[in-house]
Image 1 (cartoon, rainbow, N blue to C red):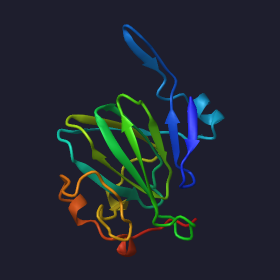
Image 2 (tube, helix red, strand yellow; image 1 turned 135 degrees about the vertical axis):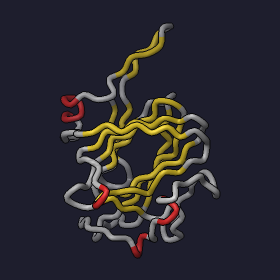
Image 3 (cartoon, one colour; image 1 turned 90 degrees about the horizontal axis):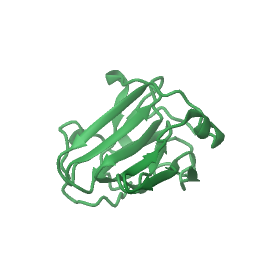
Length: 183
């Protein structure tokens, strides 16, 4: 497997070894030992699975406050997404900067999103399914978000009119968001 550090420190793009033949393919999507060899050492406690029926569904930008902050390991098993991370660690030299990655069922890439980053994605195809592991359980009391269209972030989403949940359409701007991450 290949692990590449993103421009935002701590974010890692993971490209697993894929073994294919006329029957299909095989890959290890997670190996605690192989991840540890690449400096990724955490205990995942929950797996999440989302289906977005349409192209243009935008989920995010989400994060959880301490002590329920989450590291996520994200992958796509059907369709494709633009996966976006935003550095929300106060004092970080890259605070407020974002980075985007295309993850798809075809490229089998995974993205490690560490604590201290807001995370969101926009589907690039109908019937897109995303799986992600987290190292802390969901906590409604600690659940927070940032506006997907915050002009201070300037995220280049693949659509100007995404399909949003009611919750995601009400997130505050980064400048007004409750954040407890320090670099």
